[in-house]
Length: 625
Image: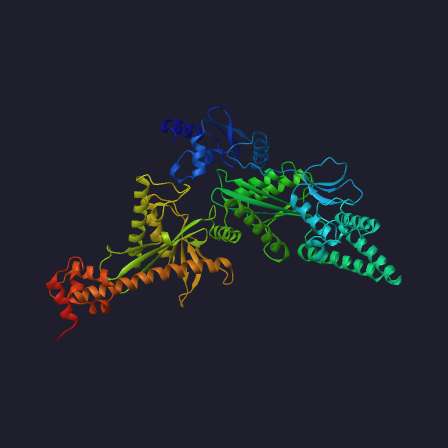
């Protein structure tokens, strides 16, 4: 916890800052810079850190608790502040800013130094005197290119030495499935093999059209010479090259000299994928998994990442495609353009091929994050899409949904379902019997009572010192705070939920799930009105699933409660049977038919019953016997 006197001193110093653009540097007790930020108005931005601490995210609060003092540098414009911020972050590598730590290195295509040459992907020179093609900045391009070249030209990928192993042992599976020419058989002439290696190198260097033209000439010559076996091999090789080319053409058409950047946000990590296109082909791809910094809105993450990623760039694209909005887009465009010496455009494609590639990049980021989080890539992408749609800072991993059901004024109940990682967590479901609403059914008052009791249990669990939400084994039910509330209802229900949250001082995003006249999910609503959902999208199906599951769970409890109430009211007509004995009989036998089938001994064995009361119940259900 930060010392109140120290906090007051920091707040006082921040209040003395000017309303001018500049950069601020947060330092710890050792004077080390732990955070660098920029501001359009320094006073407004810096004072926000030292007031209303309870509203800060955990990471912002952790940063503030470590601030001993801060410095600032005034600039003439917000753009100058942006450039200075990027320079200082690069220089000092502050703890609470983004750190590009992805074990980045350089990768090469290696051609071995031996008579029967091999093509492999390597991260460093093996030192055998072979030839290296590269460097590339990620293993993706290298591994994919080598794999395709070896398959197309039927080159061996095993470790058997040639010619020492000619004719020794069985041929491998690759030969039988026609992915290797079978050099190990000793029947492949060296000239034919060396020719295939040269063809693979031509393919790797991008001379696809020239290579196909040369192969076609040779195929025709072989056919004219009646060497149909050689002609068939060349024909298959041309077809394989063109198949790869066709796939690449479909995937990359219309995309030239641009980078695509997309991110997926988790609870404490986020992933960024960057795909680099040059000459209408994917030439490189990089993935980063990073810790969420102090200011962790997705738009801020994109802006900060762009600054760091292009800080040392020497090959600037003409266009950067983003998966969503980023902070200071105009300033970043200007910064990148000045660095590149020409115009660099930041854009968010809305349709067409570029939009499809941006979505592909985002799915890749979600998959990368899912590996780190040990979750399904589809679930990560779905929750990330939910966060985007609702404007949340990060993807909600723990969602609570609420519904109210009533069958008359005497049976009003509520239900809470829980979805963790996009999957239902039934052990955390909870039922509520609404007791504080009198008179005619009032959904809003019932909702307020249910949510108040839910938050009261959360506070009770916190005061009892139960495990925190980020513990290795999370407590079930009420002891964990949700990342998102979904209420079955419209804006009025959302307003009622926000009143309860404000009353308890708890910050949870809350949205309503709106149904149409046929009781089907139509949209999601918040303070800003309804957010339409595509009826054929996965997010729509997910919201519908939550709403349907919550309604099912609540209405099942309501019907059970109504049956219980009806039976108890019926039993209370029996002389000597009051609410306590009626409730005990219901718990023992569940239905009126089951009670009717019991003899007096079984009825008397129920806790709270005696022989006289048992006889009265038996006679009530068996008159005239």
